Length: 184
Image 1 (cartoon, rainbow, N blue to C red):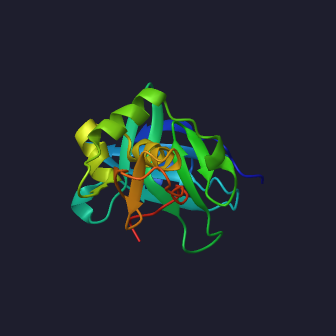
Image 2 (cartoon, one colour):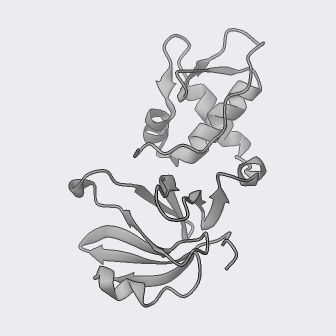
C-alpha cells in the first residue's frame, strides 16, 4: 500500500481493542478516551499494515501532545518508529509530513506568527522553542518553523540546536531541519 499523506479520524472509543478493527487504510486513527484522551490508535501511514499506539496520557510516562484547531489534529513531537518500517513523520493539521521527504519544504507559516515569535525572543540568553510555544499557546512545530525562518532571515540565531534568541548579526546561517523527536 502507498504512504498516506493525511490522517482520517474514525471516531472515538473507550477501549484500545475496539479501535484496531476499525482501521482500514494507512493513516486511519481512533482516539481512545476514558475520562481524558488516553491514546491515538493509528494504522501506520507508511502502509506497512502495522498499528501504532501513541500515548497521550502524561501520567503513564512519556507522552505526545495533541492539539486540535479548526477540527484538525496535530501531534507533537514527531512519531518515529524504531521497529518495523521505521517510519518517521509529523502529524500537522491532519496532514502527514514525512521526515525523509521534501514535505517540510512545503510548510508555510503565517507571517504574523513569525513576528510574534520574534517579539518573544530575548536578546541575551536563548530560549527553547517549546517554552515559547507554551508562552504563546501555540503549536510547537509552528514555533520551531517560525524560529528557523527568523534564523534564515538573519533576525535570530539558534543555540544548542533548538534554542533561539534575537540576532545581533545579520550574517547568520539558516537553522537545521524541522523533524525532531523529543521522546527518544
